Amino acid sequence: MAQDEYMPIRNWDHIEFYVGNAKQAAHYYATTFGFTPIAYAGLETGVRDRASYVLEQGKIRLVLTSALTGDSPISEHVARHGDGVKDIALEVPDAAKAYRQAIAAGARSALEPTVTEDSFGQVRRSAIYTYGETLHTFVERMDYAGVFLPGYKPLDAEPAARHRGVGLAAIDHIVGNVELGKMDEWVKFYENVLGFTQIIHFDDEAISTEYSALMSKVMQGGHGKIKFPINEPAQGRRKSQIQEYLDYYGGPGVQHIAMITGDIVATVRQMQEQGVEFLPGLSSYYDELEGRVGKIDEDISELQKYGILVDRDDDGYLLQIFTKNVQDRPTVFIEVIQRKGARGFGEGNFKALFEAIERDQALRGNL
Image (cartoon, rainbow, N blue to C red; front, side, top):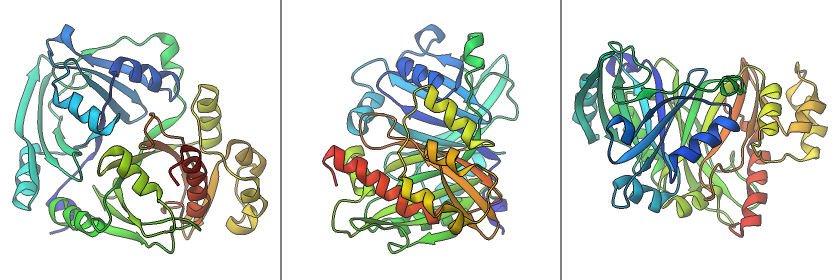
């Protein structure tokens, strides 16, 4: 049986963050990253233990959730991990079937198949645990016409908010960090439980600097729509960025979310104007750029101005840039990526990216 017949996945459904203050986090992602608040659940909608704000841009849907009491599992999660991704939800045609297959293959249950409904229809959901405390919720929403899920009320965004979008269109991939020696265990999990296949392997020679290294394998499912790189630290002279993440997150979790744009220069320009901070590049990177990647459509001086990186593979080239951490702990960040045929992940930029991250690590005293 082919992987996508075994575990059919239609697309990304949403990404839920557990945060210390959902109202303020929603304002941050709206005003800087250009997301539009579309729905809310909390005391006013009959939810007693949490407040959740749903934001959208293109096909990307973020849910920001915080606890309303100090003894909530959400409060405990934030105390351990800081603001971080709790749930990578996947849209499926049959949430109960996806759950049964995942559990039969060895997954640990987080939510048995559940039906919720309101006047807009029904949503069926189930969930399993993955690395750390991260969930995959299976969402079956074909019979639902509401704004997000039952229990949420629509939010009327101010006209200004709807024009703040920066051109982020969809999720490209989501990267997870796991402990040393655990990468292959989670590769097998995605193969056996979700029917994913491994498409790329980067060893510690490919992803290294003078001081640190990591290893990564990329898992793919959902007819190629869903890509999960999984990183683990490698031995190096100093602490790797993966180990720094594990130390401050308190274990495995989502390291970054890559979001697609059709015009990375325009997107990054607007994001910077709205207050997003990116990892700075080095001018020396651009001196040999054309010789390394060949002719590209973009003005190299513009790319240098904004710190945008470029890499080429057999299918074309890509442009990418990484934000600084989007919370106080050195854990989660966002990647902005534009693909012009390339299917890779910017292997030619790994050294430049790592050196930029290490410069930030050094400022934090963690290198």
